[in-house]
Length: 251
Ligand SMILES: C[S@@+](CC[C@H](N)C(=O)[O-])C[C@H]1O[C@@H](n2cnc3c(N)ncnc32)[C@H](O)[C@@H]1O
Image (cartoon, rainbow, N blue to C red; front, side):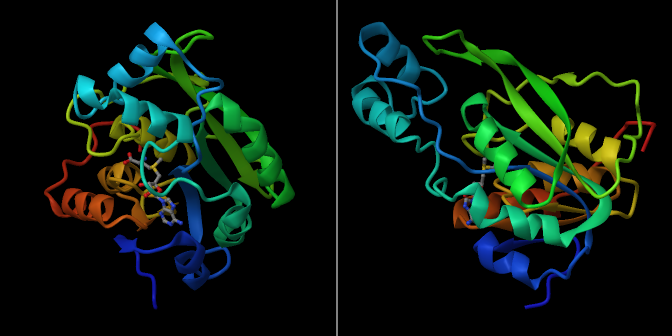
């Protein structure tokens, strides 16, 4: 199958990415799947809090099953793929002297980082996304996530070198299109920093398409892969709707 720019493809990244030529994309930005383990068994009020916030979908009667899902780390169906199953392919398709941003929580950061270096990437920076909201946790509320910034080849500057590595962008809390959906504005910052108009941005785990939409708004080309029909449909719809070009002056 020929993979064309400005499309999202339904299928498994492990197969689809093989269709991309070596060094054919300018930037990778992805919020990748991994198990979200809570870090211990919870009781009483904590059990209630963990399942009564953003994870509660069906009201109080279903808190037990929500809790079981949280314990299994299953915020969505397809999140048990290992970093080692895709990382070296991401490295292969990225052009030399380019950047790659991967979103991850604290628990999985070490594994992700080690796998990235095993695949040939070099560490560039660790960004912190201040979400503006926090989810309950017995060991401090979770108010941030991490974005591991990697490079392939030589180090190159970001476009705005005056920007802090602490990114404060409000999380999407109402009408979420995906259980872990990310704000388009956050993805825009990463894309604007490490690419130029007409560059090709790849998101191998596109979900509801936030990265791809950000790329489109910034006049970049995009390629996305998503295995789940439900999120593929949402992303495809978002990408065909009329898109306002981003108001950011500095492309
Ligand atoms: C963390 S979510 C991405 C959410 C996205 N950032 C958004 O804003 O909607 C990761 C996505 O990867 C998808 N996924 C998991 N395994 C996959 C695979 N092998 N191939 C393609 N997509 C996969 C999941 O279905 C999920 O939608």
